[in-house]
Length: 253
Image (cartoon, rainbow, N blue to C red; front, side):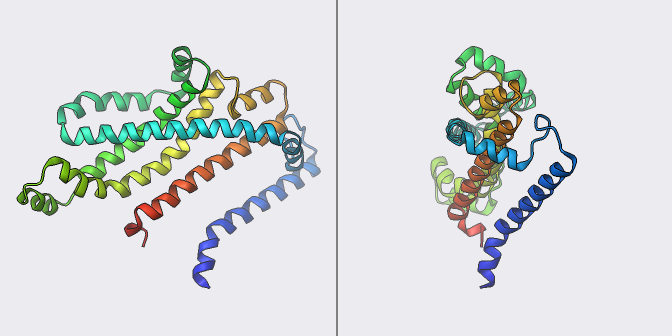
């Protein structure tokens, strides 16, 4: 019984907090009569959602697809590069500073270039999403692949194990916890990257909807779009966390 209560607590507490905030927001709007263009009430946002729910789900689905593809591209590329770093110090010294420089560059400065190179379709948003997700996975993967027990490496060496065998049996299992921790971060960043890409230039996606709503002063619809993509990001994060519990089960006990 207590285990079940502990399991639902992480859901119930944030949900109750959200309800209280929405009630307070609605009450403040009725009391002070805020301009809907500046700050719409939750009921006005709900009305915009009810009127445009089909469009909201469609545009959110496009953005989440871009985020998922970018997340996969960035994460896989980062992990493969981390493996290369572990086996070649020259590759690490030659490329790691550029990865840091890329991470330090403001996203809004990169987005116009990606639109110029890849067009204003889905590809430029996937690349932007991948670039944002890339760095945290790279850093944690390198840490996980190198933070190996020296005795385990000595044992594999005494058994004449090849680099491939050491990688598959020691380094990759050891890096799983590190990588999943970074994947949870990368999942949220991937959504941010896709939306920023849509702000710069797109004809679809939730970023395009928010931009259009802002231009036409449809603030309730803009808030509804923000709420939808926030919910999408939370679901994405939750799915990665769920995968972590099953894949790295020895660390979740």
